[in-house]
Image (cartoon, rainbow, N blue to C red; front, side):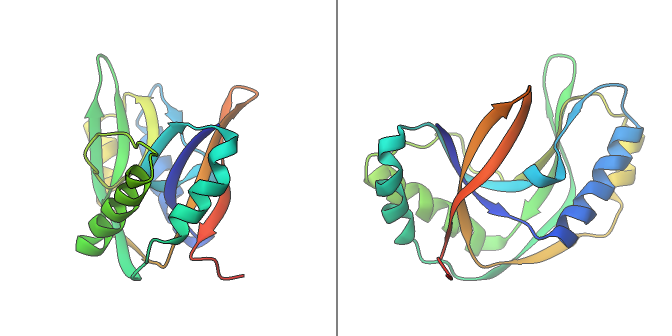
Length: 177
């Protein structure tokens, strides 16, 4: 199973993200746009992981202490590719966010679960293969920042169903049940 660790968002935050994605879409001739139910902030990407490791992963992740913090999405990041781009909202959470991502990666790797080695760049992808104009990106970036409180994270699975990516939370930390 393909796994990652992420911050998920409440519906009002997803609605505000979707408003920005709609503006970008209006100024693009192509692109695959993330569905609102898949909006998330990746903290660590594990990739293909054996189902048998799921219990151990849950135990390891339960050891991560979360200090609640405010997280803000503002501005646009455009990761260039050959003839298009990945369009994302820039994420800002200060040292609390970078400490959380680093702490999660450290405990996972310390227990033998390697993470993607790319540097942590907080962002929320809204479109892949997107050719949105500079005007559209600027219009989306001009909207007020979106701020929310982060109090935990989830272990997520990524599956392709009927050609579409579907992200599902497997468990959330800290466990408040």
